[in-house]
Length: 183
Image (cartoon, rainbow, N blue to C red):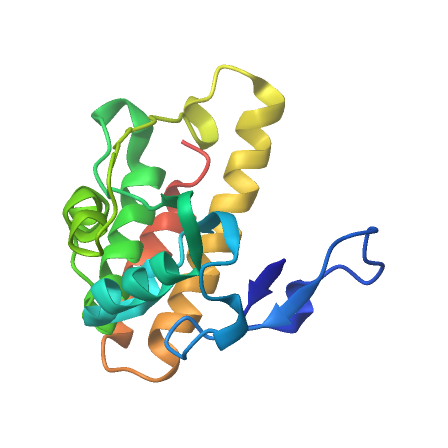
């Protein structure tokens, strides 16, 4: 079962055994899904949760069968210097969007406590560092990283400034990102 708030992200031709449903993480999950999944995975979704991250994780925890697992992947927004100016500017854009939504800038670091507060046990936390963009030693992956990060930065800027008041700081961050993307 796959969910997203935007159905355009669903594949046109569904592989056998896969289903997709429109779901807003701020809305209640279908009652029949309670305690029905062995594994629940969410990636980079809590950033849009704003101050509701705990309630959203509580709702996700309710979907898991006893003995099941939840995997959440979120950015820490901390980068080593070797990632270069483009990635640091990208993180600045992300932070602007986080602040616009009222999301904690330390969400990735706070996840273990949020999971424990949801009643989950055996909570584990792993930080995975990646080299995105020009700092990746593989030329093909470096090129893909530059492209995907530029698309992501522009998308975040549009999304973050579409309804809220932080337009100038977000737009300025994207401008700096675009100028430095190839460094």
